[in-house]
Amino acid sequence: MAATKKEEMVKFTLFWDGDRYKAPLFVGVNGKSYLIERGKEVEIPRSVYEVIMNSNDQTRVTEEVMEKAKQVELIQG
Figure 1 (cartoon, rainbow, N blue to C red):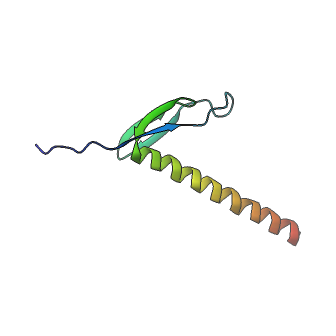
Figure 2 (tube, rainbow, N blue to C red):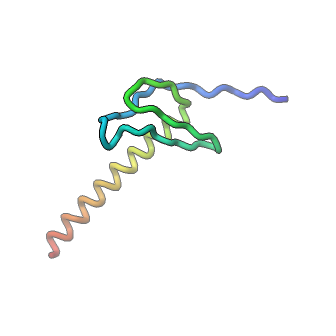
Figure 3 (tube, helix red, strand yellow):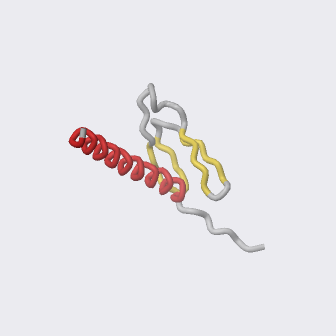
């Protein structure tokens, strides 16, 4: 049986506001499920951290594109 290499763990605190962002965040990576508690420092595998960061980056890009589309729509009428 081959030994499995343990994944590096990362300390992370997920945003919590007690309103819209209060429920734990579900993340799935390579067939494993994780439920990340908000507002507390937790240790998560680096792969889970990277999924969260990539999702945040994509959300920012999407918001920028949507804002530019609104501006174009206003200009073109």
